[in-house]
Amino acid sequence: MSRTTFDHVATAYDAARPDYPASLYDVLESALGQPLLRAEVVDVGAGTGIATRALAGRGALVVAVDPGPVVLSLLRARSTSRVRAVLGDGNSLPLRDDCMDLVTYAQSWHWTDPPRSVPEAARVLHKRGVLAVWWNFLVADGVPWFEDYTSRNEASTPTYHRRHRDIDWGVPLTESGLFGWVRPVEIPWRRTVTVGDFVTDQSSHSHVAAQPADDREELLGRLRSDLLDAFPGGVADLPYVTRVWVCRR
Image (cartoon, rainbow, N blue to C red; front, side, top):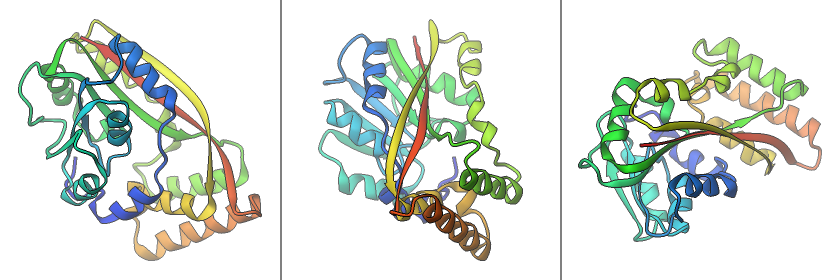
């Protein structure tokens, strides 16, 4: 992870990134075989704390790890005493062996180096502890505004492609041999969001934030215009899917 990847868009990230569906946390509890209440969790790549706060809201004791001091400052300001923020990253967790019930990566596993991060996750987990990695994906293929916006991103950012959402992240987890089982779960849901908030959300994504300022403003301006044409009331109803891989020691 880069220490500055999201620090310069921390406010936009905190204001407009979506939450995760409640059923995701049901999946985690099912994998753990117990409620999150009083579970010891490390949320890695925690950012401004979207997943951290939800985990703590279910009663977990959460160590939030992130390489960005700015995003962690926002996380601290918005968190309860159930959360402890620590500077670090998933390739070298600042935690002792065998200390956690659950390791989570919300929108952050792809920033790690799996040959290093998989053994690190296994190292800090208790016997029968659980690792879970997940992402929210907007799935609006075939819709004109989405096709235009996605095509523009793919053309301007060589490292970005919508098909990245189809990567099977369970493969390196299974091949590591460090987990007894690995299971993918897919949770479809819908997000109701104002056009303004959605554009702000998109401005915080790394492939957009990395573009030159003029190109970024043109891209986001076109997105706003197309969305207002598609949703004249200024509120969009959008199809999402949360893809999660859960595995247990």
